[in-house]
Length: 618
Ligand SMILES: Nc1ncnc2c1ncn2[C@@H]1O[C@H](COP(=O)(O)OP(=O)(O)OP(=O)(O)O)[C@@H](O)[C@H]1O
Picture (cartoon, helix red, strand yellow):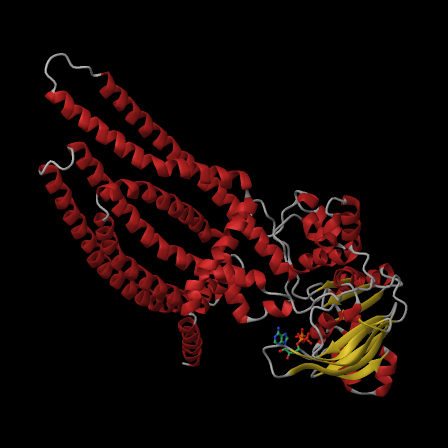
């Protein structure tokens, strides 16, 4: 099956990359300072509170063990006392131990609270950073599958990396606790520490190995995971439900999902089982070492070298330290693994757009004097060898209404995307008033060019928001929004909705009302009127409108944008002929250019298609 081959191919290459990057994985720990900077920027106050609480907490186990030792020694001392016993010291110690236990409990709760508050804020903040960064990138980057993989991995980080924060902080806390406990153990016998390390290290190495394997697996499966997410989405979504039902696709989708997810499950299962088996064997070693040390301490107590209180203190310290060390080692490899994933987030954040504003950007002329000139413009999509458009040379005069005509795939949408500088020409250049488009301020240019695409987005928001999207800074300007809706005929549609302009559109949310295709189009068209753009581009904006509505929309459009430049893409010749000039594209090349009458007189391709449509054949 070609698709399977392709999928396998992708995974093999990714696997090789993963093996190559083993050293990178250790190096990934260098991401932690950057990560902590992000946390710090999220909330300095909560970060400090978190660190302080953890610092206090790390001293508590030693203090509690030590007070415990004093209590036992005092009890043994009191047993030996004959005559009247003074219990004040004992009760003071018990009260102290109780106080420490209460404080420890409170601090634990405090840490959990601060962790979860900070975690929520962090996750919100990284989501915002991600949205903002994605907005800076080029359209072409979004059309690239490897970019999507990066984005998908980065997106996962915003939620899951919250755990990393508590892990690293707990790690620091445990290291300090161990430091405290180690002082006690070393004072008794430094060899105990060595036994401890020998017991824990094999388990640590095991963990590291398996973490690296599971990271490689999960990374190499990113494309498949994306496919799984996609299948899950199309299998159960409001947008696809009707086709899934009529074509009876659920079985097909479920089978495809199951096949792919089963493969991943099996690979993952093998790894998980091996990890569990090795993990148990290696931690049994730790238990052995613990009992070895325990016997050593017991013998010293029996021999009278240390008191019974010291016995409990040391045994407690040892057992605590073993738990902590094991925790630290396991967590260390988890942290290293998380830091690897973090690399994906930072990689994504480091992606730079290729379309950059120049060092000294020019403002777009107001008004545009001469218009736009294409000089031998050609464009290839990055993932394609084929020229989508080529050898385009023409002048779009200021104030002119130009219609683009051509068969499907002729390059009309590509041409307007180049005009709006969503893509950079692969060859040739586009001039605005005689100066290369690249010299202009990108934001200003985007501001002065309003495009309504054929695949415009149906935002599941209120009617008012859906229109304001054309000029989001005017979201509060009700008059402007309603004025735009009147111009595009959307007002009539909106007036019939229960909540009028506050009506949520679409079915995704409660109380949302779905519109028909043509009604949606009128709403989207209103976005064009929200802007004071000097160049308006409408890419098949009326394909879903009925004939009368389309005619009216265009008559209005010509009147309402009088004096501004416009480019219209349409397959309906009744609309096209209203333009000042018509540019006929064929397979990415300019074939004919002139007014409707001129092109008819030429009796070329345009004339042929026009007559066909007039006869009702197209
Ligand atoms: N994102 C893309 N990546 C790769 N190739 C693309 C992409 N978008 C379009 N193409 C290719 O570029 C060519 C021109 O496409 P374009 O969308 O500009 O045509 P169009 O004239 O607008 O077509 P239609 O009338 O169907 O909307 C087509 O051959 C298409 O396959």
